[in-house]
Image (cartoon, rainbow, N blue to C red; front, side, top):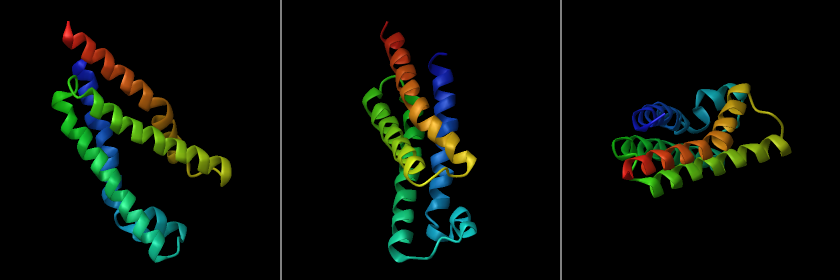
Length: 131
């Protein structure tokens, strides 16, 4: 599980925030929210579009990191740290409001469990690159 595998996994996972970020920038017109009957409240629509843009940005940063994955440890940890914190937010929602659709439970697992594992994996790749 070396550098190339980490690059491929990172590039593939970066597609998730890129694609869903673009979709979320549709605000309450996003198919997920529209099909749920989410009301078109200006503050909710504005926040969804904002967070969609931030999510898209995180995905683009991950793509940018791929070629230099072993030498950008701080930025890699910051991005995955943000994703981890987003997963904590989802966990809080599950505890306080209830379970979301099943794919979102999977996203939460990736964010809370996968993020630290990716940070550790990158650490190992960077360490091996210094030898």
